[in-house]
Length: 629
Image 1: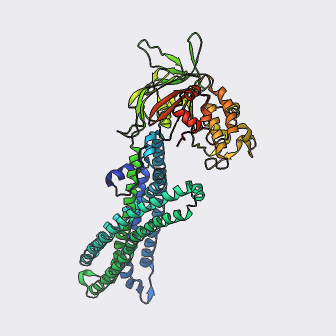
Image 2: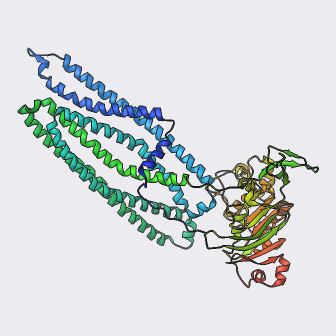
Image 3: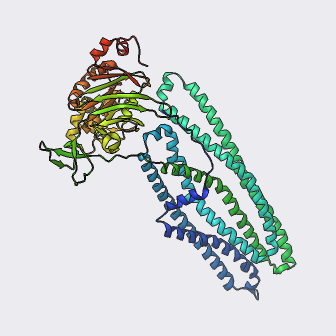
């Protein structure tokens, strides 16, 4: 198998392209997003307008007293206006935050849908090259980073930009002299943010990479917990985890040290700026320089606080935005992957073929399997009943270029025949099975299915005519009935019962707490390995296909149960082509033909009696002179 890749954290390669791609998923929310922007702008200006009202409020205090009596008219009017502005700003803030949350969650739903749909269309080769933890992180870490950016960062950036522009404009109007001090302080702030931000960004990238390693190791240890305990590997596992955890701790400490430094530094700079503005503004007010008043100084001081705060907020959001865009690029890279190629045009249909050759198509998967060939020049369509003749003609294949796994494989299997493959691990047995159902396409040689090159048959139709029972069974969350019916979604209850009886699973199913309605979770953890394999065999049986493939299907079943299953298999095999991979040679004795593979070549072939008579490799395996590895 090709080597798996190691997931690496990096900055986005094209920030604008990734951001544009994310916004494309927000299509349909354009009107809502425009309202969000309007509300953000109004909310930001509400703070600016509220601060600007401090000047007339304070400057008109002298006019509120006349003849020793309070005149509340103008004073109360300003207070009511200020309160109304702040309330409207708060309502706008509440509205756009709730709306952005809805937009972000819907956008993520669309991204996850596209990601999952694309994964369902990717070839097996892709999953051989990428670890499960790497793919799962796309749905967890990367999507969560995008959610954080959409729900918080974007709104924060817009609000900060509006606030900075609005406050700076108001400051210029109130006092251009004091604004010179603001510009000088802004230059210092930008330098500090650049210094701290660059180091913080590197730290967060290292932290995410270390976090991925820790998560991957935890997943690996949980999956292999039985092996860990059997070999008393607990202490070693703890040591390895401690090393990875310590690396994560160092990276997180480095990243968060600089990130946490930023806020105190910015606060102290803002305090210095605030104090300097208060002193200089007070002097200007006392000496009436530039028409400065006490009210102007108070409003200006509020503006200085409002000016530095959004800059700090933007700097804090920058790392999360870069992380989100990097995650988005990884997601879009998968979405942009080429789907599984399929040049096939011969279609499998559900049809009844009468002896006189007339054909009746059916809506259900009952009836006979039949190939529907392309239209001829005269407009007619050719139907051929699927028999299950499988032929390998000098097939050469390798998972990686210049590294062949199969060399010149030629064989023929007819309906009703049981063809077995035996050989050492890595000899190419499972690879042959992968080629029959077109998990991989052959670069050299041909594989024919009823005389038709399988490259010309649609993959979905080809696989629909086959059932496979793998050595590693997988059961889905649902009832026993649901898991068996997975092989044929429209199967009746009676068909499910019949398939379970054929696989000898019916006896143990009836002893479960709720029988066929027993819920299975965690890949059937409440069942034994042998019981899970019996359900997998029943799932294959209910599909009732022309071709049946058993990849070590009885490896976890005791010999007594195996004997009972083989009796059921005899009736299931009738009229079907069966391929069997087995290390337990007793299971292949009754095969019509046994193929002995070694280093990707068939070195011996024949039935059990013929191969024993040859006294070759099979004879050595069967008599124990040579053990399968």
